[in-house]
View 1 (spheres, rainbow, N blue to C red):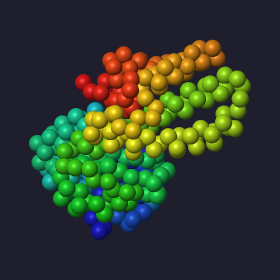
View 2 (cartoon, rainbow, N blue to C red; view 1 turned 45 degrees about the vertical axis):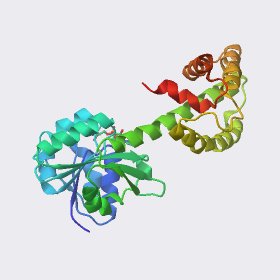
View 3 (cartoon, helix red, strand yellow; view 1 turned 180 degrees about the horizontal axis):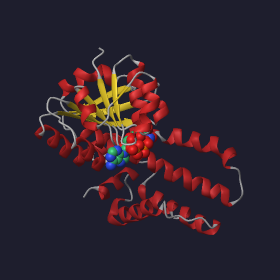
View 4 (tube, protein in one colour; view 1 turned 180 degrees about the vertical axis):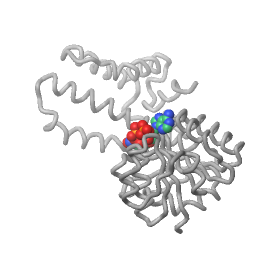
Length: 285
Ligand code: NDP
């Protein structure tokens, strides 16, 4: 399939996406607010449009990878979207994606939202993947283009679902970052080498990663009482040692405090004999 594609936004990610499309031999039109960023792509065969409106007019398939929802609205607002398929690969919330889908549809366009799970150098490489949501037939029609970026993971008709999946994975990632930063702060408080400690930490995190699969079954069933080997009450008591040790070592425990509070509350609410997973009940609003 060699139908043309337009890429709006040539930051680190948009440039990587446009480059991947060019790499599969697809004609690509590019536009960026600061025009100089089009040059490396033009050198590789892309056509630079003078304006976003002109770029949108050049292809039926229009990919936007801008800073945020506001910039997407601003840029798309200058163009005629009738008959276009707009694929928004800009990070945003499920609500923003749903509202954008409605707005694009009012302009006579079709819409898919995407969530990119990769950093720019990973685009087109093994391990990169993108979540897509919106009409399935639209995803199927353009899938060949999407596959240039890495794995294409369709998650449902509701346009908000790609962002939901993306932000859920990022939530997991930032949770890991919290633990990693706290662990190194403790290690460094004694002047020990983070580099020497790193294999222990990454091995431990890999082993504990099994918690994701394990917790999922309990979370779907809502039953946190099966096969309890490390009950919540015990963990809440042991967790006290983390901020206590941090304080003694001159390390802040502010990254850990929210989970500590939730564990204590759940134990005080009479759920101390359950699995730690039951803390999720306190996260439901
Ligand atoms: P950059 O900061 O490198 O690029 C931002 C882009 O947005 C530039 O093209 C910039 O134009 C443009 N832009 C910002 N504001 C406006 C505006 N008001 N009107 C027109 N254009 C505007 O960011 P990335 O390319 O890294 O990220 C782009 C999107 O991809 C973000 O939503 C990000 O969350 C997402 N993403 C990025 C990842 C990464 O690791 N980089 C990973 C996964 C997703 P100009 O050049 O003129 O400033």
